[in-house]
Image (tube, rainbow, N blue to C red; front, top):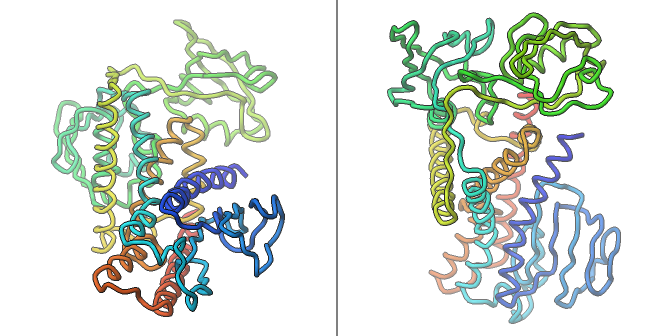
Length: 453
């Protein structure tokens, strides 16, 4: 249920921002926007000034007389704004045999058409920019000044890759790394789809690891510590739910986990795994409370939980970077440039066959999983994920493919060059072909989502 809720919230925000861009631009350019829809297909309910709030479909011959019908439709996988006199996802061509009206898209100058078509992409870029700016201005950046691994558990992906507890990583694919953030970006972002050559120091001796890409987990790139944990990482209790197993075991807010079920524990994933696999069983727990080591026993509930909030803490050297208002604006822009370059780099690797298509693209299931995971990590993490998704939506939408904004833009440019409108039948044909291809592509992505569950 949480997947469904976070997916709906995430898609709802992105679709609203994108379609509002088209809607506002059309209105400012004097065009009629007949429909503003979140979702596709059957109208569930909506509002317009003529009929007020109504459920179900409007009459087929309904004429809003320039008033927009704001509606929620059945399939929550996108949305659209139906602009009068434009061939779009609705495939409505009733206007084709009529004289163009001043309020129609087809009657407006080329520059206004370009503004309306690109406004959705611009709004998605602005959303990403604002979030990146906010992250830099309000939060700054926390840099862990270490590249040493805290622990490598037997049988994990890190263990099979050749890492050992205490290894200090010096470089990844011949690029030097000085802190944990550089290390993670080099492993999970900048070398996406590539095998890794990792140089590290082990007991003061240089060791080179050749790691196939398939051994590196995908979800680590979303911010967890499933693959490698930094030196000094520990997990403490951020809150204790009243009458929960943790409360009955006398666990206190601020306690730091040392050992659980006689196993040294360092980070959240370890703790959650041990607790969830010992439902209803009493297990020993050792925590650090202030300067005292306290031994307790706890019995996880039947749901595999103990009723606490967890937070990561670090004892390694930490550098806090803060930025001013205007510097944050520039850094937000640089974040967009960096992520855009990485996106096109990834697309290039997909076409070269270096990254499987199903690994590079995610559908509703992956989005729901990522949205839930980032939301569980906190509002800052969720907003950052939202910014990345908004940027991805902008990049994909501006591509010159039928149905997408980039496809509409290409048609507008061609019409500007040839000085006349392309016949409506041809436009509808292009839209139909593009729509079918897009549906097949979405079905394939959804299929891959199920395979990767």
